[in-house]
Image (cartoon, rainbow, N blue to C red; front, side):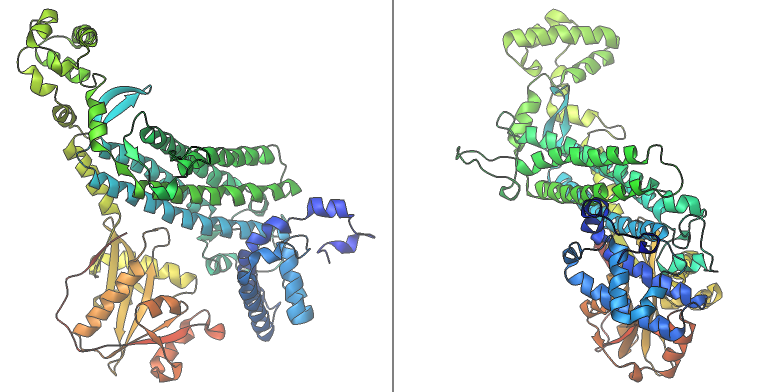
Length: 621
């Protein structure tokens, strides 16, 4: 049954239904639609549209539906409903009867899909950010491995000046860093919650939209209902980020295809990213790179199509907006796949340093150094430029490199050239001369590699009073979304010795505390990391650090209450009964927003005898 059928005396014909229905592609929003519905059920309970018992029954049914949908999401696509919202509502009614019909109270598909889509985009962007970080790390590792390898630099595809191969690697790190910052910035703007905006004019129920936003981990609620349901700027921004980044990947592909060619022979691509010919057995084709280059057009096309779709649309929602999803559903996974392929290419590449050096020595790539040498002799650069041009002509006529000309030949064009010209023309000297910030000298490239590695580094340490503001911000964020208990800043000051923090690039980005009860039992609490920082491993380091601390204090048992038991299982924790926890632990639960629907699991870690103190550890992503 359609969600809108009451107004009509007959249903749509088959052709229109096929043309109109979006379930064949928006089934991908199933998880987000159900998660948003669970949050909306909580909001309806707050305004007494749902009783406590009704809320519990609805949430349980939605959770069951979420489990079912996660088994085979693609099966939803052929279920025959108009869209994912119709599917979820119908399946909910199947489970709880007429109670399921109450869930849509005060809500429109307009604010529902806007919320679902933002949730999907936010989740997908998080995955892409991780892939960007991984590709940057691969480039940095290659740059460090090949430090000292000399490559001819090109302009107009003509050999220009010698550069370090590592300098080439770090150029792409800079591009990827801008891609990362752009995407993070876009996520900040999209991370506003439109739920509760209704069809266009807002909801008639006294919903606490800020609390609703917090439940869904949005940083705030949208401010204008008309804009909230019709805004797709976040889609444009994501597609713009994807297009620019794919442009960078396409340039990388073109570079590497050329470097891999038989004519250049600078690199050899791994067997894992190449294929052969059905006819010519000697061929090893750079298919992964060519596909990256080719798929760039698909992403560009999605961006262009979205701009055309939104052009001249009146406020508020229009059915044109149904066209916002297919392009994004294709472009974002394409971008992600291209990043993964680029990483595989970089990680498996072999560099032929002899070939790159030989090429750098040819083509008179040291001509600029000769011009600079003449400037040092007091000759104006423009005149020196002309002199070097004449010497290049002489070298070409002799079929020699510049450094192979005799001193007499040099002086036949310019008498000021002396024996000291030869060290200047050596490749190593050419590289070393480019020592200003951002140059290709070994010192500058090494500094760039070091700076990039530092950004990937997480440090864990005991907290100090200087960390109170950062810890308070992290705890406030996760308490607002219901994942941690709130704590007063004064309490953090008094208990600062309980806390540990992680730092990324010198900034506190995670925290956790080890609270010790009178019985000697300890609990890991207030564990949280900055969601905008996509460097992995912070939670693991915090838990490990606090367990080490517990061992040094001769504690025997550490417990945790968690909704992510899989994470703690990997850290060596095992499940235990809540009945085994002290009464004070359970009393703390009275402060929790989810106390009536607690889904936390109790887990414990049994400690062995204390070991000598360890140096605080570091982790490189």
